[in-house]
Amino acid sequence: MHTVATISITPSGTLSINSVDMMERVFDEECKSAGIIYAKHETGFNVEGDWDAIIQLAGRCRDAVFVGGDRHARIHLALGTRTDKHSTLKDKLRAVQEKSGQDVIAPSPA
Image (cartoon, rainbow, N blue to C red; front, side):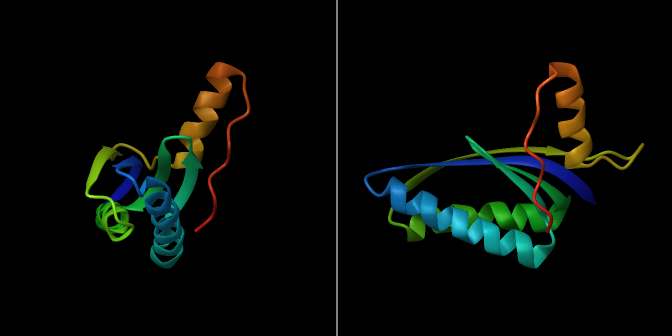
């Protein structure tokens, strides 16, 4: 099922900088291989793709935090699906831009 989501993963511990770098590398690789469209933001990632692929992506990023050496991670997922129309990340960003009158960062192609 087509899904638009926000994934925020906050590692906590002495090695958090290493964990964030590792998580971002995993995220970039996984998105490209799974065909997930994404946009990074200050607290995480906005993503668009298949439901199962996005759930798997969140798990792989969580694992990267632990491989990076941290023992605790706080994970926030906001998942949205629609059955009445096809909704995209670009559509959502365009709506925010129209309402706010400010430019928004476009998602990266898969």
